[in-house]
Image (cartoon, rainbow, N blue to C red):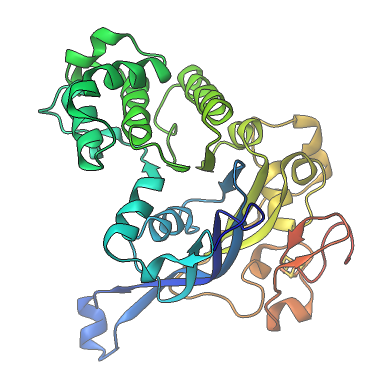
Length: 333
Ligand code: SF4
């Protein structure tokens, strides 16, 4: 039984790897299959009504995490709890409920919008699948949904290709909202849009969150947008969370050297901070061949011998942030 204090979503020690096909060279050398580690021992909680921003370099596992949350991928280990219930065990009506209550919105809305359906047909289909409205009220609800995302009623009779990228994202959001979810997972929702349109879509999400009490996971590259929309931010590196905390505190006083480097490397943030920090050094290690100890140690200016041997675990620090580092920047708590 869930209560108000139960997190909406809790991720416990999640792990996911992908088996890669053997290359010809591997076969000739008689080597076995290779495994790419996408998520490792990833733990986090999502409170009801909050926006959690997730940031990190490409390939750090952000999208794999999102896909595990909506059961597009089955994790190898660990669990995802929704209101305290393990989603891997949900079947039948309870699984359908979960798919309704947790909706994902993708970077490319054409993946969820059928090009041969008008907007009305697409939204009406979503309403019908989950029996959200009586058939005679569906047309009115379609118009309401369009207004909710800032679109005119006449959009209903047009096809997806007739809209700009930003408008298509609005339609994708309307489709997700049609089933009245509690949680929206926005995976690089605005990455392919112009900067001014990105801001409009992010402000739309903020507005929707206030009006509908949504819980949002906002996955993005742009730290300025993440800072604008998120209550808390999680920083991912090579499949794990290396720091998580309240947005303003994390941006003002990061604890993990990787967070510090990521902020320093972001041109959109305060340039005066740049002289205080060192940008990320070196290449991201291959997820096929991860370094021992702390996965960030080959790039970390603070690395000591212990870092090369012992992987740090995520722990609460004096600052209130959680960081996975033996030598956090604000000192151990
Ligand atoms: Fe750097 Fe060591 Fe902290 Fe890893 S554990 S981030 S290598 S100081």
